[in-house]
Structures are given as C-alpha cells and as structure tokens.
Length: 492
Image (cartoon, rainbow, N blue to C red; front, side, top):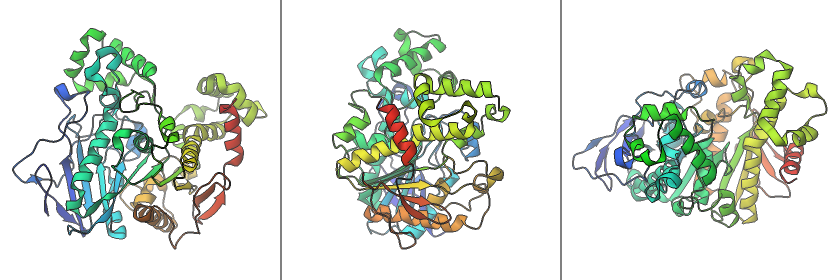
C-alpha cells in the first residue's frame, strides 16, 4: 500500500478490508515564524513515510463535553497538519470523495476521533474518505492584522486556510488513492459545518469541492474586524504584552497561549471577516452567488442545545430567580421581544424553553437562512431534521447536538458510543438509512435512497424536510411557528 504523492511516497495498511493511511502531512508544521501565518505546502521527502499511525492533534483545552463525545486531548502538538484516508481500493477507479471537517466550537476536536472512522463509508459506499486536523483556538483564529500589520493579514483565519490547504492536497493527490478530485463533498458538524459555510463563501476555496453537507451549523458564526481586534487586545493584556511585542507571541509556549485564551467567552475565536479570506460576511457572499453551483444537504437536531444545558448544574438547582437572570443575560436587549413572542407566563422560564430558543437561534435559524439563500440562487438544497432521542441518561439528552454523528458515519457500534446514544434495537436501522443517504448525496447530489420516503428538494413554498427518527418521514416546514416568530424578532 505504498502510494506516491506530489511530496513523496506514503505507506498505509489494510484494516478490515479497507486501505488506510494515517498522519499524511498536508502542510508544513506551523511553528515558530509560521505561527499565525497561512499554511505552506509540505517539504518533499525521499524516503517512504510510514503513515500507519495518526499524527498529533491541534493544541486544545480539555472540555468535559468534548471528552464525553470522545475527543481525547492527548498527543497534542503545533505540528498537527495531518490528514487520514480510507479507501476501498488502490486501483485507478474514480470514486466520490467525502472530506470531513470536525466540530468542537473551533477550539477542540480532531480528525482522528474513533467516531470518524471512515471504514463504513469505504465499505458500504465505495467512496474515499478524508479527515484532517486544522489549527484551533488562539493558534487558528487570533486576528492580529490591525495590531501587527500586513504580515498577520490572515492570522484570524489560519484554521480556515488549513482547511483549504487540505482540500488543495486532496485535489492534487486523491486520484492516486482511488478518489475522483472532481467529486469531492465536504461535510462537517457544528464548527465543522460552520467551516463548510465559510468555505462555501470564500473565493479561496472555489473549485476545491463539488457538494457540501452541513450538520448543525451554517454561515452565521463569524466576527468582524472590530470584535476580533478587541479579542486580540484582551489576550495581549492577559499575557502582559503590548502590541509592539506581537512578535513574542511566536515564541511563547503553546500551552501558555491556550491557557490565556480560556479567559475569552466560548465562540470568541472563530472565522473573521478580514477582507482577505472573507471579503464580506459569508451570507453576503452566498447571496451574491458564491456557491450557486453547489448542491447542499443541511439540517439540525430537534433538541440541539440540550447537550449544553445538560452539563450545566444551574438547571438542576431550578432557582426561578437565577433562571430568569440566565434568560435576560443570554438574550439581552432582545429579551423583551423574545418573551413577547415565546412566553405567556413567567413560570414558563425553564430549561425546555431555553433549549428551544437557543436551538432556534444558534442552529435552526442559521440553517434556514443559508438554505433560503441557496434556493434563491437556484442551487439544489435538501433539508433534514434529526429527531431520534438518545436512551442514555434516562432520555434526558433528547435529540441533542452531535447525536447524529455516529448515525451518519455508521460507527454506532464503536466502543463507548452507547454511553451517548444508549442501547436500543432501532439504532442500527436508522444509522444505515442516514449513512446511505449521505453516500447517495456524495454520489449524485441527491440523498434519496430506496430505504427512505420520497424526499423532495427544499423550496420556500413547501420547505420539505426529512425527519430522521425510528420511523423516518417527510414533512413540510416542521418548525413553522417558531421560525416565523424568530423571523419577526430579527426583522423588527
């Protein structure tokens, strides 16, 4: 299983009838003077590189939620820009390619988590699968251009540029691994799906993929130059540095940078509208037709936000005064309008309502917005909602964020997954249906299969949506009331 890439030969191995290569470098190590810079192509090597073990993952904090989801933050390094490939064969057949972008709020995660094992896709779909790591948090999304000048012009989007570099490597090399560089589908979940939304918009990713799947993420989560610069100034203050000392950031231990960045609110270090990688907000670029030729499959989970409130002890105290403060603190100047639309009595302020609102605001509404932009540009759009509820923790997780991932990957029987999903006889059947829908989309841009009800594409009249559950069904505009209420708020 020795394959020649544009940079040198790589040796993989056969695992359960699938050819696998792990830890292939797709860019140079972004260390020292390359920290906070765009990735550079790998240097060529003359020996055969042993690619039978995953490479190090990006530096990241240890978070309870991510540990629960199976991310093990060990073997971390700034030398993290590696990708992994699963292929059914090393012949010269041109197969569809699925390239996965992991989630983790842009601060955690990797392409080597057990749940992202591409073997099932390779076996069941005759497709090639690629996963990879990209720079996270302060090392991937710290915008320094306004403080440090031109040499840091893209520092706020290094993580996105890593993703683009990985896609360019796939474009140049995947043919040697049995894949078709012209049939690449990018897919991701949470921050991975938000990355997909960014890649659909940025001109720098043009031509590197043909289709896109967005699971629980869209094109809303970016920040402007002003906020990005405030974040950088805050971190410099934490590190007791001034803007004249920015060069020293290249020398500080990565662990020190990560520790400082933990002082920022969650989702502060995310893609930046920097005028270079993102000339405008992704929604503006999409409106202008940046992805009008790209079929997309997009959807959310019914109870996305339950994953986050489940781990927050404040809800177990059930203190009505504290709960009211949470609502006011979260929604700020929009709270009165939200309360008017969604509540009739203060006693309704509870975890269920909070989950519903945060799910709509963070995930469902952005998905609708992206879908509508694509429909208006005559791009094919397929909408889904994942309603199957976990049996773990006596059902308290409901249909929470990230629950669909092992179903899509058909890794439902991997060790430890039952801690998230619980054990029930309908798991494997639903996993097979979703898994094959994703395969069908990678092949044709249409997720219909014989195991699912007839699934029409999304339009603004019917808003046809596939509901993935024990009994899958197609419905029209399933969140209509909440969708209209939220549209009234954001348009007021």
